[in-house]
Length: 231
Image 1: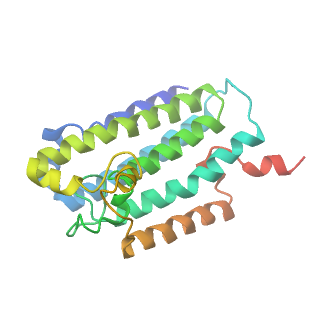
Image 2 (image 1 turned 60 degrees about the horizontal axis):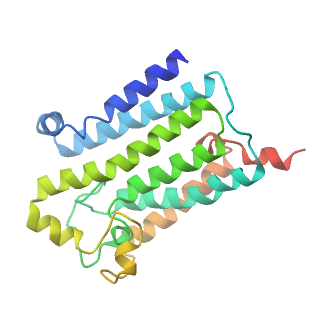
């Protein structure tokens, strides 16, 4: 439990860096934006892996039982989570998290037409599906905290983008997208026009989903769904 608490505190502390403009700005000026993003993403991934490993080794106190119906939740949600994360990272997006630079065309926003925070939404789906399928206290604390972080991240990302882009540029880029998935599409502000980045994200996300299932990496789903197929 001590290792879990330490990993949890370090993971959450590390994610305060993007929310601290002066600290983040200093890191970018020192390392360069691309190097900072790569190093920060790698550190976040390693801390996340440690956090999950620590959670799995912590004492178990169940709050509700696992049922076959609950197992369906991550199996259904995770393909969408993978697609949102992969497509979001591949799409140039000055409004939120992205690994790709380049020019963002608000008339052809790709996955950003669905939501301007696709990576955060993928992360949120992953976390919430794990809250449902894991009924123990540690998992609820872990994935519930990660889900809350993703929700808070929507506002923080918007605030950061507004400050960096300025009001006019922000309004121009954000006019054809929304935080809530498909809200901008449903109210007619933008049409769905998948570009090559979006198509690559869809295929890449589905490929990762199948690869994790085929490889038996059920830790990513929080539970082995095959447990209910073997009496």
